[in-house]
Image (cartoon, rainbow, N blue to C red):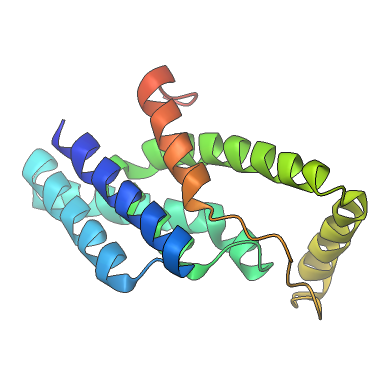
Length: 168
């Protein structure tokens, strides 16, 4: 119950901050990471807790690093997922990340279709190929449609709480 409340409050504050300022500050992400470490240490002991929290952080970052490098999300989103991972561990953050990806992908398709940017799909895949093959961000790849990805992370977290994990 404590971790649901802690992570839920942080996600709500991050969402408001992301919508208003377009960024998630370190003053929010660093305490959530440290809080997850303390929580897991109290739950699993020092060695097990630190290990669980660090592994969750690494997995949280790994899930979102490619979209970040492609310019699809900000660094605050990546650090926020590291914080979620420090509370929920590797399996929990994978599940939350999968749900967030489904919600974010659905929202992206909706926004692209609503703005009738069918050529944006082609551009997105070309950008992806360029990043993966040449390891560089494409010139002029900034998107005109901005979507605060904390919405998808929050929705993914809510789905995880309601449905449970796909992975156990």
